[in-house]
Length: 325
Ligand code: XMP
Image 1 (tube, helix red, strand yellow):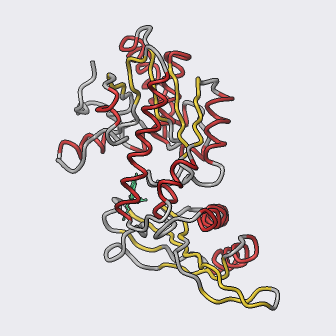
Image 2 (cartoon, helix red, strand yellow):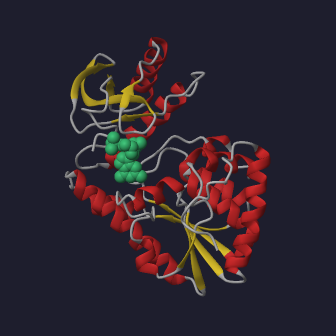
Image 3 (spheres, helix red, strand yellow):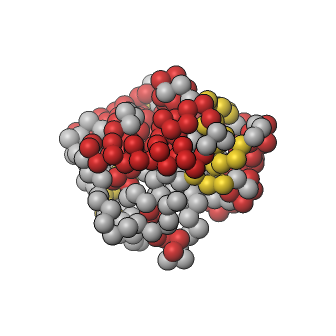
């Protein structure tokens, strides 16, 4: 049985050989822990839950059921990638729940950032629990807890289950195969498991998703504009030889005057933010090359309806947080 403390002699997993040894050992451990019982996993498509899913598929195959909840605030292409990689390529038992309408209806007219986060968090748990209750004989809940979560929990900074509140509602036993790993090790293991680079080296993305980047009360048209603009911003920045730590855009809830096809418009701006950091406590803005900004300006304003202006945020943290809400 694993403890919550990383043994001093545990080597940092930084080669495919060490990753493969970890994978073999975990497969044995997982089979021993799970036996012939069933496991449920909330699969977001982020690196931690994806690695846990891939490990569990190797260890217990169809005894695992993955639930991917699309809250409508995911980035362009994300739900499709989860379905392709896990549902088709890895042959997982995958339940895909498109809960977009449910989330957006609950969020309609809600402008307060904390209220928005609470609604998204609670709704996520409700949807997941409803799915869990439809299944029979589940005994375990898989979780992508990683070592920094444990350390922060020991330091009293936050509770260490990363899908807030799920374990309490479901009363399942936890399966946390990467809980002693640091993020860089999870990536090496993910690579060794054959997950695509776009998943393994994915930039951090907040749980409330695009909801915190579509400021104020979310509307479907502005959210769609944000999703399209974000895809372009990511695509252009990913052409750089070295990617920033995090890069995205925000579409705020105000409009500015513009001109399109000789006619006056009143459309949203798009704010580009690219940052570099070690610990996310202190963050510096990345000064993107002018050509990249130029391409983003031209593509976003021509390809995305209702965005007529692009701004770049050069503010460090502090005083500005990374996200806008
Ligand atoms: P801030 O805005 O606090 O962001 O400077 C620091 C880092 O945390 C991410 N972030 C979140 N991640 N749920 C998450 O899972 C959240 O509610 C959340 N808020 C911020 C943010 O993207 C950045 O990497």
